[in-house]
Image (tube, rainbow over the protein chains, first blue to last red):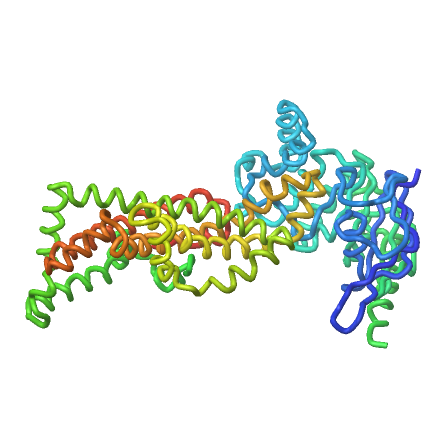
Length: 258
Length: 272
């Protein structure tokens, strides 16, 4: 079943000296339970695409459907994780995680149980009553993911979720996300500029051109995800595929100067 | 107004008592200068009482109840005006920041009246409301309104879009965005406006009382000034200065507590 369906999507930004095309004729289908990543040079409009899917900004034409229904605005069927975390700084860790549940009108008992379970999942026991400013970048990102999982959306939209983290924390978080996806089999659409991350995590990698963004190439990733990270990363197939994707992205980034 | 004193004050991490001493040093210098000017007869004694004389005048007025009563009257006027001005100011600021129509309606009014000295309207208020509480409170209200409107407006405007987006994505209905997201997000800004208004409220109360009241510290100061009893005049002045200072410290403490989650306020030992 198709979970995310995008056809002939166009988006322009109004600027002083005329409109700027951000996305041109984008077509994407994501099956239910699939993990798809979009990579592309910076400024190619990949975040814009995610914001359109999130329902935060409108498109200028085309079809955008989530589970067969046209997107008209934000909805709890899609959980969004932003690059800047976008946690509510005035709420504690526990309050941030339960926010979405509270909004859905879930009973108190269930809110508390869910928060407790998720705090344990992300390993932040003892930090429930801390404010986001007291957390490290990695901890903040864990909370951002936990609060999205709390209200159990069918689809996760991830906007460079690990972009602000240091290399070591990023790897840990990637493995956590992978485990989480394998356990829940949610539909995931991620945007990143990190080719390694894209190939390591997703089943399908889409390469976007520079602005106006189009999907120019598609790679199916068939690697054994039950292996440890070391085994995967040192694997010949993984490296070959990663190099191919890297070259494809590089071609797009290089096309800028033409 | 800065919430974050630079760190040069804290280099070498002096003890708390040393820092407190440093903090009150300027006040001590001014009081000392005052005493010296009087001691050396640099100004005619009839026009400038010494700090000691001022203190004893204040003590006398406190004992006979003159200060207590008038201070309560002034505090009532100042805080009633401040409270109403702040509530209305926050409401207008929020409306302007979230609705284009409200912005178009209030925008020109705010821009044109921003630099108008509100005390110039007092003669008009005397005609409308007579001598007494209402004239004082309305003048204070008006003076408090603008800083609160402007800071609330800018506070809401500078809420990052992703904060609102993530709230919407988590199912926050439109009518709750204001209350659950925009208001807490702009709390620091709003408080900054209220703190500026707190200063204005005492300035306005005292100056309006001097021309349009039968009671209050302003009236007291005015009467003693007219009669040349300058020690008592300064005593009244000192009383209101102490109250205003205590009010500002209390607001600051409330701010520090309510905004304990905020990075920018927490980075510094606010206000010393």
